[in-house]
Amino acid sequence: MTTHRTPFRLVAAIAAGTAAALVMAGCSSGGTASTSSSSKPVDGGSLTYAIANDPITLNPTGTGAGNDTLAITRQLVDSLLWQDPSDGSLKPWLATKYKANADATAFTFDLRSGVTFSDGTAFDATAVKDTFDDIASAGASSTAAAYFSGYTGTKVVDDDTVEVDFGAPNAAFPNAASSVALGIVAPKTTETPFDDRADGKAVIGTGPFTLQSYTKNTSTVLTKRKGYDWGPAARGGSGAAHLSKVTFQVVPEASVRTGSLQSGQLDAISSVQPSDVDTLQAQYDLVTRANPGQVFGLTFNQKRPVVSDLVVRKAIAQAVDPKTVRDTSLNDLFEVADSVLGSTTPGYADTSSGSAAYDPKAAAAALDDAGWEEGSDGIRAKDGQKLQLKLIWITNFGPNQTSLELIQQELKKIGVGVTLESGTVPQYLANLTSGDWDLSWDNSSRADGDVLRSKFSSSGAQSIGASDPTLDALFTKELSQSSAADRSATFGEIQRRIASQVDFVPVHELTSIIAPATDVHGIVFGADTRLDQLTGAWKDAS
Image 1 (cartoon, rainbow, N blue to C red):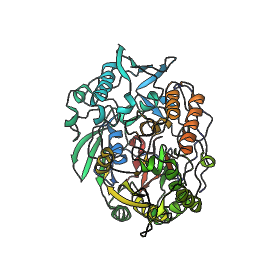
Image 2 (cartoon, rainbow, N blue to C red):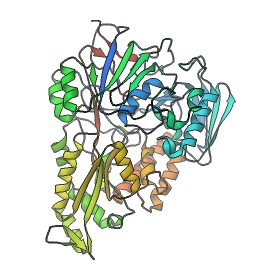
Image 3 (cartoon, rainbow, N blue to C red):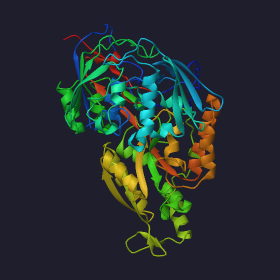
Image 4 (cartoon, one colour):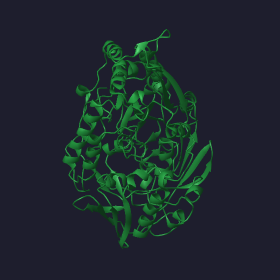
């Protein structure tokens, strides 16, 4: 299937719409049912959904296992806003509307009435304030810390109105308010110490499911919450879930997930590997969507002298052939990347014309001219410094190893040595924090171009260490823009600047793939290409 590149426009208010269309890679849209059926949804039944990793934490704002964690926590908590996958616009959810002040330092949310937490406590402005204050206090322990940069507090205007204030412009906050990490939790949750919430027992949300049990490395079992009636109207399926129970089963091996689906032991599997697509596509109606946010590629740790050199970075970029990597490791469901942002990201721009195109001969010549001489082992050196680099990566996506081994071979051809150091998500984060690396291979899914700020601004939480006043000024600019069109244009400038400075080598987009059994319907992705709430999912009557 051909995927067309369609730039997005951001929205500054809930009522704002866009004309841009979202075109998704794959077999079925993240906004449609997983299989077609003329029958009506059936209430009742249990769904067993396989994930690849233990969630690590069921605290919505804790550091977990990425998509596998968010698939579960999205069922437990609701957010103030909902982002529409079809166009990136923000729609009402727990907030009926919101407005920003002129310089994007204050955001006022009008809250929905009649909503309750699963312990019976009323959802109100105080719960919102407590949730946001709790995230800000958690600091680096929270995955949402970057969203609260410059946070000065949340004011309770009345029971149904809050004002969230920042000391500096933060136009990205409304988008963040639609994320799982900013899901609103009950007072009993925020009263529990942050580090004591991992097992989920203290996590109380307003979502359509509640936690029945969590067994580490085995399963998380959720049960339907009766009376739920406040899902996003724009999404459809705003009422209580059809399913009575959902079990998220940890099945690390992709082949075992596939075989268990085919044998009827599982009702749906996530993290379908590209190698299994052809087999499963012949039997099931796959749910696929390209992830927004930063694509898979190479990031340079510019705190390290060798890769702080633009000549070296450009040579590395010219030595890597993204299409060959994609064709070797993946399939046509995964687009070759032409920007640091994926094509389903609001604010995406094609920067291929301004980046270092594949040209290994030019790369080798540039290193020659810069004094990097090839040694007897084929690895270049200059002033006693070998061009031997450490590349860190995560093992949570099967094709990563194949991609990186190919990149390793491509770089060796121009005299650049690469040592690959893999690890689980926690190990990777520890390696990243240590600073003992030259290159990293990762992606970051978020349906907002602001996802780049954490890494590519000098003050970001995961800053690459580049000193680039031009790029810093652009991030400051986008954070102060409440205009959707203006902000989108600034994201284009940011992407072009990253390409021109070769701060990142885009390789391929990530496409998320779910395979549901033929009797399972209504599984969809959200705008962030993570599993949306399962309120609309159901199984045929047995």
